[in-house]
Each structure stands twice: as structure tokens, then as C-alpha cells.
Amino acid sequence: MKKLLLLVAATALAFGASAKVVLPKVLGSNMVLQQNADVNLWGKADADAKVTVKVSWDKAKIKTKADENGNWAVKVATPAGSFDKYTISISDGEEIVLENVMIGDVWITSGQSNMEMPVKGWDRQPTENAKEFIFSATKYADKIRMFTVPRARSYNEDKEDCVGGEWLCPAPSSVANMSAVAYTFAYNLVGKVDFPIGIITSNWGGTRIESWMPIKALEDVLSKEQLEYKHSLRSIKPSELYCAMIAPIRKYNARGFLWYQGCSNLGDIDHYDIMQARMVQQLREDWGDTENKMPFYFTMIAPHSYGNSRAIAYPLFVECQQRALANIPNCAMVATTDTGEEVNIHPAKKNEVGERMAAFALRDLYGQGGVDVVAPTYESYKVDGSSIIVTLKDVGPGLAPGYGKWIKGFEIAGADKVFHPANAYVHSYREVKVSSDKVKEPVAVRYAFRNFIPCDFMSVLGLPVVPFRTDNWNDAM
Image 1 (cartoon, rainbow, N blue to C red):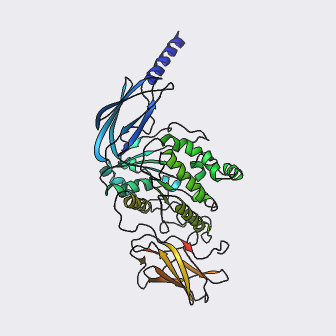
Image 2: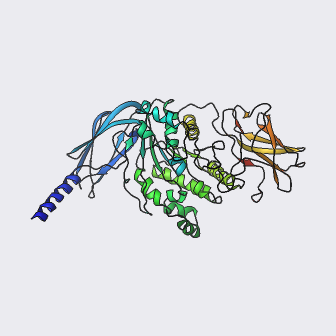
Image 3: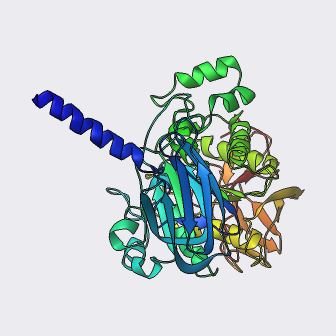
């Protein structure tokens, strides 16, 4: 009899749970919905149940019917973003009310540990100005909202929902644990736009780009042998994080993407750029962007010893990232030549990354252009006697350090391919002159072309020059 009563009680509880609409974790109170869009709302109910959706910014009711499996979905038109707070009611006879909902711009951010690293930092790995961001957090409670996708894995099988997570408003306790790059991106935007910024961040330290791509996308750009090799590299296999941590959020309307990853793919200089371009294509397809309107901003990995400070694996990978930049529409790369740390792969300077990403968004989407926010890069060179003059592009108002100051980080070589530390100074608006007493007949120049080397070349606006070389000697160090 006791077992029968327990069975009846369990059946009643199960029925009660299924009789109420169930929403995916990413839809909830405190969320930010994408402005000026037909946003997706979706969930589960009983099979064939009638579902009614009401939003406080519109008097109309939206009615739909769940399918035979209980799945339902509607599209709701959102107004222009503002700091107004709204509610959403969803009912199949039993009402769910989402409160404190705001409308603005939503950004999807992803990557490995440098995107995951929280505002509070990690043991022996601080983030700069952490206390300022943490203790000013409540001022941004109605301006920034963040949903962090919990870690989960699924091999080649898309999951319908995240394993957990909730939308959080900034407060000291919540901001301390938010992605520092994602939070500072939003922080640097909200003071310059008139609506809130929502962030959905999905990160896992130490992971390779293949984990963030579906198998079908990898098959488009890798050989069978390459893909088999990728499966043998790490415990986290290709597709596992895409299926478990991207697929569940891809119905959520957004404005653009931020990406900070690459250290785990350091040696893949022959095909990382191809994988990254295919990943971006996949993201845009998943979010219904057929015209490449959603910007993709990514971060150049930062200088670090990577096992040998004198080696050149890092700058070779940066070259690969630059090739990706050239082949991805509506894309920009944040330079981080000035943020790296020789002994710590997680630089403390996270605000610089967030600020530079925000500058791209302000330029591209929010009508605040007029100043060059692209980091200076190499354009050409010429031999001038015992010196080499290098010309750069995207220098903005000019280059620094200024008059009478030598630039750190340059090396010069002759035909013997042996590089020596060089004297370098800003020669003119877009030019730098480089020489060394040890190289009488120079043929090649490199800047910041080591895994880690002290360097300080930048635009006068403080944007660091991207590492470069004038040669193609991959075997020369």
C-alpha cells in the first residue's frame, strides 16, 4: 500500500511538472532581449497544449500550440532599446512571469581561459582594476546583464538546453565571477549608448577551436586524417562544446560575436585560419545571418613564453590570425602586443581587450567612428644604406614612442639570417628606421617576433603595433 501511495504521489508530481510551461535556461527574468527584432521565445508544454504569450511593451497576445512532442515557439517584435523594465507572461493555463526584462543589444562571447577568466582573477593571476569593477557593479545593474553557460559536453549531438545558468544583474558578488573580457566590453559600451547590453558567454579554458565547431563544419575544412588526429589530442573532443554549450543558445537573437581563443591551437598555423573562418560561417548560419551583418571581433593571442621566450611559435600564429582576419567578412582583430606576460599565460590587462572590442562596435554599429581604432600593421620596407625603413598602415594620428626615444622590440638581420637587437625610432608619420652596428648590409627586419620580447611600438592613441617581419624565414631565429 505504501509503495502504491508513493507511486501515485510521484505520478501526480510528474503530471504537475509537465502541465506547466518549461522554458530553456537562457530565457528568464533579468534577461536582455535584442532590440528592433523578431525575437524567438520557445519552450516545452504538454503535447498539443495551447500557449499564450503576453509582453508588457505590447497589448497584443500571441497564441500558439505545442506540437505532439510538446515543443512550441513564437516570435515577438521588440521595440528600440531603452532602460525600461518589462515583464513577459507565458501560460498554458498556468502562468509563468519573467520580470525585470530589458531590451538592448545582445552579444555572444566565447573562447578558452582568457575569455573565461573572471573579473576577480585567479590564484596568483590578478586582473587589473578588479576592485573598481567589482565595487562599482551596482551602478550597472540596469545597464549590463550576463548569462554564463555552464560547462557541459556532448559529442556530435546537439543539446536542446543548457545544464544550468541564469541571467545575473551586476552586483559585487556577481561581477566578481563574470568573464572579465565580456564584462569590460559591456562596461565600455554602456556609457556611450542609450540602452543595456546583454552578454551570453560560453567558455572553457584549455580548449581547442575544434571543440567549438560541429563535425559537419570540420569535415568541410579538414581531411579525414586531420580530423582523426584532432580526436586524439585532448580529452575534450571536436564538437563537444559546440553541441553542449553553443547549440542550446543559438535561437537567442543577438547583435554580434566576440571570440578569445587560440593558445591551445598554437601549432596549427597551416589551417587554424581556415577553421576559424568556417566557425564564423557556422555561427552566422546558426543565428540566421545570411548577409554577414553580425560582426565577429576576436582577440590576437598575447605574447607569452609558450615554453621558450626566444622561439617564434607565437608570432607565426599571429600571422595565421591575420590571414583569418583577411578572409572573414565584417571582422576585426584586437591587438594585444602590449598586454602579454612572460610567465603568465593569462594577462592581467583584460580591460584593454574589452575596451578595444567595444571601440570596434562603436565604430561599426553605433555611429561613433571618425578615429582609427585598428592597430597599426606592417605595409612595406626598403633598404636605406645600413638601415631599413619600414612603412606601416592604420597608424591613425601617428606613431609612438615620440621624439628622441628608441623603440623596444626590433631585430635586424643580414643575408646570414642571424637576427640582432636593433636600434629603431619613428622616422616619419608612417615610417620607422631600424639599424644595428652588427649588421652592415641588412636585408630583413622583425618587430616583436618572439614568443616574448619587451616591446613598446604603438600608435599615439595607444594601439599596439601587431608583430611583423619582412622575411619569410620560418627557420631563422
